[in-house]
View 1 (cartoon, rainbow, N blue to C red):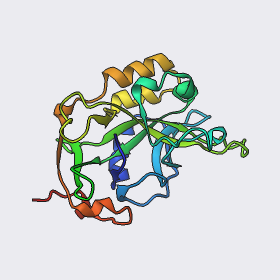
View 2 (cartoon, rainbow, N blue to C red):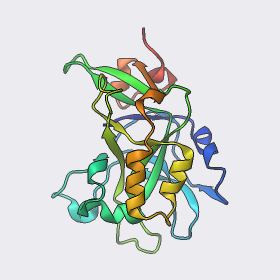
View 3 (cartoon, one colour):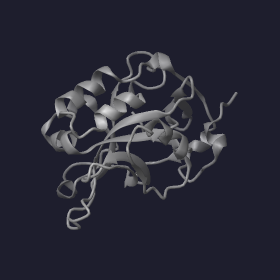
View 4 (cartoon, one colour):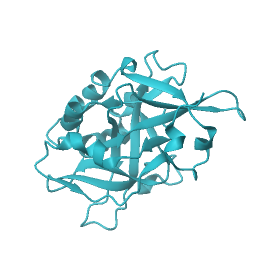
Length: 224
C-alpha cells in the first residue's frame, strides 16, 4: 500500500528524464515531505501532442460516472489493472509519479509507528501510476485523478506492509510511459521490472508525519 509519500526534490527527480526531446514542467506544487491523498502532485505523462509533461494531478482516481458507486482509488492492485475498469487507462492513462520515498505504519491503533521507505542508494523512485487527465479541448470531462499501482511486498517488506508501490528504474519508466508500448506489455513490465525489496531500506520516523498538516525534512529523518 502507499497512503502517504515523500516528494521533496522535484528537480532531482526529473534529471533521469533528460532523454526526452522536450520535458515541459507545468507543476506549481511545492516540495512536500508528507504528501497525502486528495492533494494535487506532479506526475509525468505524454500529452496528446507526444510531449513529455510534468503536471499536477489530484491523488485519488474516480471517473465522473463512478461517483457514489465506486470508491476513490489512491492505490490500485497490479493484478486488476488489465480488468475492465482499468483497461482504458492502461492504454492511454499510464503515468509515472516521481518520489523520494513513501511511508507505512505498523502497530496497534493509537500506537502507530511510521516508517520511511526509500532506495538504499537514495536514488529517485518512479511509481507506476494510472491517471485520468482532462483533455484541453474537452472541459466537460473532468480529470479523474491518479492512482498508484501496487504489488505484493515479496516478503522483503512484509514486516512493514504486505503491499508496496511498483517502483521502476528510469529506463523502464520510459518504456511504460511510451504511448507506443502496448497495454499488455505495460502490464507485464509492471509485474517483472519492479525493483525488488533488496534495493530498499526503511527506518522509523517521527510520528508527526501522521498529521497531514505537518511538513519539513525532519519528518523523513531516522528516529532512534
